[in-house]
Length: 420
Ligand code: UD1
Image (cartoon, rainbow, N blue to C red):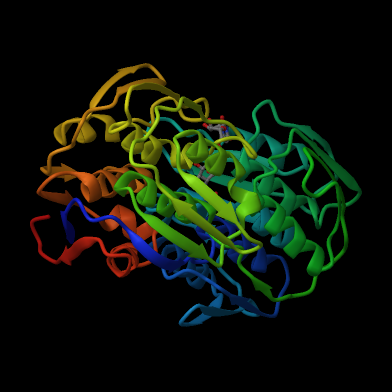
């Protein structure tokens, strides 16, 4: 297990290229199960979650070749219609194979994901949606077993807006008989990317980008190629890295339209942010004004940026209130940030952060992907040496984060070793 050793206090300066979206790739890769043939994806990020999804698809018989950021998939020989616990427990997004498998092969056996580091994350909406499309579902020894001859269209209304359930039901409905409607569909950019990819494969989907999707099922789809959209959470994390260190950086290869809520909040802290079509420039202000944040579904402030925002607010000039309405228990970073001197009081799903003059380096422990990112951000500004342990969480979702931060002037290095 590797760790990061960071000597804080360097202002980030320069330019950085944003990688392809992890969550878009994790949705599009299983979508290839919907039609036999060859696919070519560009701008695939080099991440552990992508390797996990590749392994899962390979276990099913998909042939995958990855060279740099290009991935070629061949789905001619899919034979095993199963996602075992060993893979699903590593990554919840494995549940994305459920929709395509049941739609195309009439059978799927997918492990229930179980809990996660930040509390319960149920998949009831996925299961209920697939059932509504006519599949028989049995839960047996921790597995969802779905069977159907051909799925039939249904009217599906989600009580909660869910990225994963929208993606899964969308992938199932494209091959169902008749016209399915999904109300309260997620409109996150990754879902739009998935829907547009499915349309390129021959699916008939109306209402893309709205909360009401209308899907007219077709008999068969064809393989297609795609280029992954930029990762908006990686971009947001780098913007906060600049703000927290008092730096000035330019992000290239990003989509500012996906980052409006984050940019607006950063401007409220005093940072100067300018945008182009595919770039964002940020120049931090000397002092950080406290800014409250409540996470919500897109285009609101993403829950995947909540931990990084708390890190930023921990050195703001005053108090701020950060509430997570998507995941109530997603605050594992709070006690770790406190080890660096942050003054944060957590009350259920709200963190009241009183900005301190400075953070002081210490050893801290990664618990999940975004919590780890917040610890790295705090380490960049903390006085002295911070060691972030168990950074395999970061490798799941940030492509070469230490190299990118280093290229911007941060004093950060990866140290390999067993005991971290
Ligand atoms: C996706 C993202 C994750 C992000 C989250 C919210 C991927 C691979 N992951 O996760 O990074 O933090 O969106 O933007 O894209 N819910 C239920 N029942 C369900 C499904 C969800 O109650 O069957 C609830 C969840 O507990 C949560 C809310 O719905 O409170 C939203 O979760 P959801 O959008 O489904 O998150 P994921 O798709 O798992």
